[in-house]
Structure formats: structure tokens, C-alpha cells
Length: 390
Image (cartoon, rainbow, N blue to C red; front, side):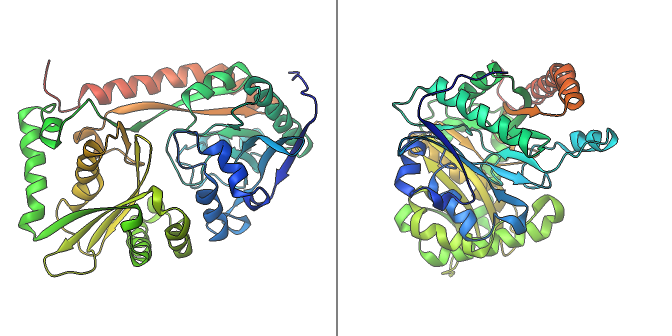
């Protein structure tokens, strides 16, 4: 596929996001709805060694310049495994092995360890978006061809950007997440009104169990967050990862959480549970917010209090979201508990291009059937939500 050349554009591959000044990168990232492509979040991943060669996430960011002006950027990584992505492409890796094709390394575009919709190329507001996008795809194709990279993959992509990229030859693979959407609720009781009577009683009982256990939940946003809480959040996160083994893999370091306090706490909201006489939380969930979006990421507790997880990760954030004009709350990966508590399944997409002809042929031949089956799964999940009948 040919791509138009744009005069005076220069592409560079970056080994670290530090090669672009924060203000320059964020001029492109700040206008986006997602907080996960901003410089500080990605830089703290690298600086804390949560991301890097030793973790199998080798930064390979693409920057496109017009003269001395950054007009396009894409946070990307070379990977020798598929861990930490939450899009499970192991069947493609297995198929490649049977075909005698080296699946790894692969080129991946996403915010590491973050299964939240919103990835896209960062484009300068006054740039020709179509031309810059096509130029960046051409640079990526050339890079993968020269370096014998099996494929390029973008995960949890922005819906509008997905339409652009499918026109440029990428195949879209449907998945689902569980996402709460504000229907104009005035308060938490208004939110409860959408459930059937049995589930309303269940949620009220789960909420009441906090007071019965002598616990109170506090929402702690932004500058109200003490640095000690960031260190404690790592301890909760690490404990949860240890409890759940492979499914709760410990990707992030203690330093990552500590660094966030310095330059990213303005995006953070912690939901901390305290006992009557406690000065330190006994449990806590970690969320990020930007504009009218709220994202749940990590949680943990020192004691296994009944229903604390539901309250710290779902109910308290929803109550805060309603009070603060949040229209969408993505609570993070997994769904077994979420679908019973007001989080319907919502489709999201990843984008894929294989450079091996046999893998490419198989992908394009079967992806429509795969997506139809996934849509059936989404419909079946949402048909069983415990909502009030119309």
C-alpha cells in the first residue's frame, strides 16, 4: 500500500519518552479524553523501570516532526511476550509457531498494563490529521519490514481513530469491557432505581455492611493525597497481585506509585477505607480522572472485610462520579462481579496488521466471524443484567 509523502516531515524512533520535552508531548496528549497517553504517566512507567528492556516492554515511540515542531507521536513498545496487555493474542502466537513464523518481537501501541479505551496517534491540532496519520503508518510499515517484525498491534483504541485505521488496512478485533455510564443520575439512590427490587436490596445490604464492620470510606482527590498514601497504595496493589498469582501479575514498581505523587496526583482519586480508630487505611482503590471520565485501576486491603472490594472499587467511585459530573466510569479489567452492579458489557477494539502473508490471510479471512461471536457474547451478558424491566 502506498502512502502520500508530506513535505518536510521527519520521523524519529525514541528509546525513551524523555527524548521529547514534556510540554511538547502534552500539547498533543492533553486534548485527548484519555489520561493514559500523557507524558508524566508514560515517563513514570519508564523511570520506575516498570517498563523497559528487563520487563519486556522496550520503548520504541514514534515521533513525526515538521521542522522543529512535533506534529505526530505514538507511544509504542517492542515486545517479546504478550503479558500485561489484557488482549489475549496467545492463539495467534501459537498459530505462528505452527506455521514456523516468529511471532515475537511484535510492535505494540498501548498505554502499558492499561485496559482502557482511548489509544490513538497523537496529532497536533493544526496539522493535516489524515496526511500525518498515513505518514506515520507508512513509517511503521517500513520499520516492521526492515526489522522483520511479525506484526503491529494497537490495543483499546479510540473508536473514531479505529475507523481511520481500518481504512488504512488494519483489521479490527472486537472485545468487551464493563463500563458504567451516567444516565443523568441525581444521586446514588437514583442510580439504584435502575435495578430490579432484588438487586437493589443486595446493593443496599453490601453498602450497609461497611458501617456494620466499623469502616468508613473517604474519597481523596488530587492535592489532598498525601505522599504516604501513594506508598501504601503500592502495598495494597502488591498484596492483591500476590493473592491472585498469574492473573494479578505485579507489573508496577513501588517507585512508580511514589513518582505519581510528584507530577500526576492532579489526575488521581483514592477511595480509602478506615476503621474507627485507624489513621492508616485498611483498604484502598486507585482511580484516575480526566474531564468527565473516571478510570479504576488498582485496589487492595490488609484484612478481608466482606464487601469492601465492591464498595471501594464500585459504589464509592460511582457515588463520587455522580457528584462530580462524571459520565463514564471504567472500573478496570475483569467482569464477574461488575455485571451484577451496573456495569454492562461494552465493546472495544484492537487493531492488527501482520506482515507475514499467511498470518495476514488468516486474520482477514476469519476476523469477521470472530467478531460476530464476540458480539453474541456481549448481547448475552447484557440480557442477564439485573435491571428493572421496562
